[in-house]
Structure formats: C-alpha cells, structure tokens
Image (cartoon, rainbow, N blue to C red):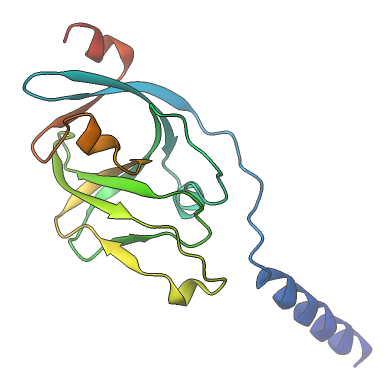
Length: 164
C-alpha cells in the first residue's frame, strides 16, 4: 500500500507541474534555406523544419522573437483535411500561417494572435480551411508585406532558389 500512496503523491505533484504553463526548452531544429516564389519576386527565408509529432506540437512556443526572414515549416507525411488547425497556446508572438499543398503552393494564409490563457482549451484554433501537407509560420504581416499570397509557391533548398 505504501508504494501505491507514494505513486499517487508523485502523480499529483507531476500533474501540478504540468499545469504551470512552463514551456520546454527549445530543441535545435534543422534550418533550411527556402524561398517563396511569386509572379514577380523571389523572397528568401530560413525555415526551421518540424517534421516529428513532438516538434510540431512544440512549434514556436515560448519564442519571444523571430528574425524577419525566419520561420518554421511543419511537414506531414499525409494530407491534412480542411478542419485540421493550429493554435497559439504558449506562443508569445503574432504569426501568419500559410497552408501548402504537395507542390508547395499556398492554398490559404491566416493570421494568428498569441493566446494569453494558461489553459490551452481557452485558446482559439485556426483551421486550414483547405487540404494541406505542410504549413509555414512567419511573423505576422510577413506574407502581405512581401507580396506573397494564395497561389504562390514555397521552394526548399538554396539551389532551388538561386535560378529564380
């Protein structure tokens, strides 16, 4: 019985800690050169790549800033439906998110405000509203300021951007 009580106490302590709103330290993700290609322009960016479930869950949580040309690419193995959404729980900076198809073509762009709630259930979600296989988060206003919109394309790798 004593072990059961100890385990119960430990579980209660851990549950208390998990509700603290603390963000795990950032794990260094691979960074790839990329570019958004429009009819009239090529906009170079540096994207951290989150391609595991754990990396995608963490996303840009806890970041206090993001360089003007930096963002995060979320990659999925299978197409996600229009109802699949992102949220801003524990995310401190306002972001734009572009949802992309398998060819890297932007199908939708949304703006997402930070959620100040310590309860993730109280944070709004931002559904893609289209099928997508990857998404890119950048500072809010990046896409509009850069002239990037629906129908434009993301290309990965410096070599794919150098000829444009």
